[in-house]
Length: 152
Image (tube, rainbow, N blue to C red; front, top):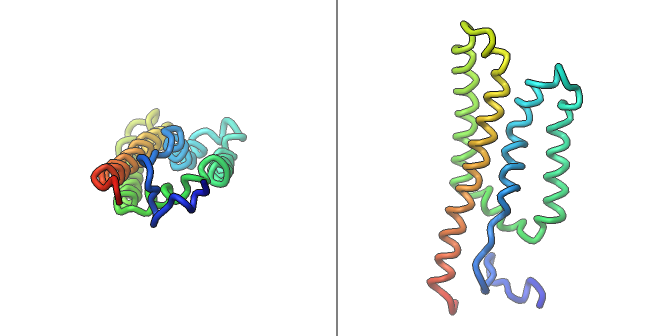
């Protein structure tokens, strides 16, 4: 049976919608954190400067191969109001972390050398958890609605 045969609107009629795999959200978190991780380690390890480019290439490869069947759901997750709020929260968090760590580390020289590592790790965790939670909220509503309307 073709995919178009069992699709009505934007949701399959049969069965619950499966979410994106957990490793995808870790990969998204790594992409967000890669700029700071590159800044932290590129002076010691020159190959680290390629990390953002490698992660973008991995994302594009996944987008057109493994995630191609789930692409419309992925777009729905990233276009939701929660995702926009997550992006705004991440932006504000990044600015506050940079400002706060700069103020905090002005007096403590050893901490200053790890500023980008701390920011990168925090952004990795917050992005991964936030994106996964956003998907969880969306799937909870979509799958609950499908369970309520089994004949529709």
